[in-house]
Image (tube, rainbow over all chains, first blue to last red; front, side, top):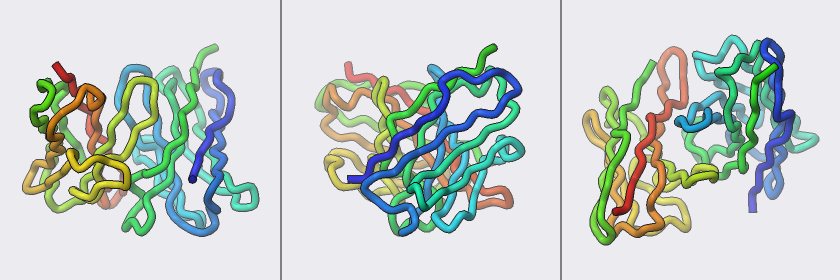
Amino acid sequence: QVQLQESGPGLVKPSETLSLTCAVSGYSISSGYYWGWIRQPPGKGLEWIGSIYHSGSTYYNPSLKSRVTISVDTSKNQFSLKLSSVTAADTAVYYCARGVPDSSGPVPFDYWGQGTLVTVSS
Amino acid sequence: SYVLTQPPSVSVAPGKTARITCGGNNIGSKSVHWYQQKPGQAPVLVIYYDSDRPSGIPERFSGSNSGNTATLTISRVEAGDEADYYCQVWDSSSDPSGVFGGGTKLTVL
């Protein structure tokens, strides 16, 4: 059974960099598929942040592209998100997820982490 | 950028059929995916590639996509189907993006 678990600071100061890691178990990232990050501000809808292929190629949300970096560490079977210059508008539950097998693109997502709330505040 | 439009809310009586729409410019030319999200939980994929159901999703959930509208249909609605539903597409334009609709709150009366 594939499982994903987000980890990282729950509180980040404005203008600093948000860093999260998604640990994957039950499947080897190096074997394939896309891996993504999605966020959801409190009481609002879902927003796709970006996705990375197991080989390292990436796609980013155009509205966040200048601030986002997604990377993969196959040796630790995990992938990571960095979002720079954060503001209160970046406060959200952040989810990591796996792209479905045999997909022609980075979406949809079939396995999701439980999500982690990140608050941006001084 | 590509925009997906969903009604904010849909209400249906138990045992009836719920239809949740997702509008977008020529969305019929794209593959549409649907997620169900219950309060405090991560989203669950219920329909992908317009009409395919992942393993474990009841046959009561079905999808269609044509023209400018995709539709998620839930037959014989149960109280447990009450949730937020989101559509998603992959917009493979010059700046590719995995776009979500704004979400629809399904209320079972």
